[in-house]
Length: 486
Image (cartoon, rainbow, N blue to C red):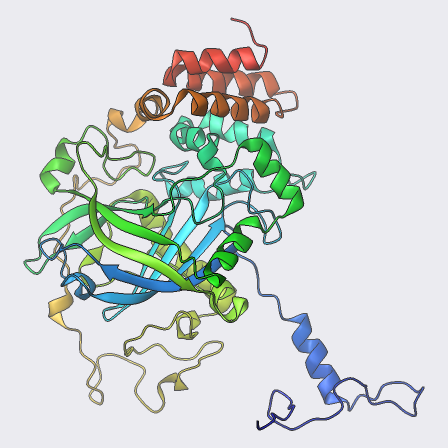
């Protein structure tokens, strides 16, 4: 086998890889030892900024295959016929923890999928829950701050979390899911994934419907008790990542079915709640799941940094036939996610191999750090011009979106938008088993007991009032667990 010569980054063959150049065997190091400088300087820059959220994660490649005919809803080429397939990259993550935190923490799990399609890259960037804590992106930085560290003590603070949640009852639905056993899934293979937001599909007639995406695990749902999750947090902080890597290495390839819910404009207008509210679900009895595909993960990336740490997922990355919606949180994310990637990875992050689409890319963007594609060569960098044949094709123009109002006002809202209690109540009464209710109460009491400081009674009382509005039985059990009478 032909050996490979050790070289510098510029390609110069090199021999002295373990010994610095010195003045005699015991003398000082010479400034001219360039390879020493190169190794140390690169080492100092090996760590790019970690993600502000979803910092701890793992990923795998796989294949998505279309199993359901939905050509009547979308003109996306991927879904043009049953049997079509494409490669995918999936990144699973925790939301609030740092890169070195435990992946068994009580936390939502990120569930991001990049479909490498013949229409370009389609990113479905969601969580393992169908709802979220807030419905407006202006609250997102504030919410995430409460999940991070106290600016004074640099410690995680249950007081910060519960203070925020008690002041934002819209978080109740997600909070109840988080403090159920679903808040501590048994690894990444045994949980569902959700696009969470309302998206749209557009067919060849330019007709639009609203959709929600659901990934249903074929391994079955498995969760950890709060006690078991805490135990694994200390024993194996990489438990979920290890489980995924080892399963795929053994060819025990995990699978998910992709399903959609569909809602027409007329149905959206009559829906009891705002269908674009991220804190609400669409009842499956009214809007049943429709299977459209199967995803199987079968390959661990050869290099974690190149393919997982540098992977950039963004809800803004849609394809022809799949679009956005008036969901406020989605509207905020289509700005925030690409902006975060440009900060972490540079303006040309979509030229990195893991993010590069499988189709040719034609535009007039140039320059910036790490331009990897020849920077457009001698082609013009403006549009329109008389020299290239790049055209804007009317075929890809999306239909107009009907708006409810032509008045811009942050307070123009439907009173039903403030119904934060009905759906959490249904979750408590209709979805949870008695064992799940007991575990949820135990987990909530355990966390609420950790609230400290002069505002403790006020915060807990405010939060208990919310839970009592969800269900009086829930409020009563929590008060009893906290030793609060009346």
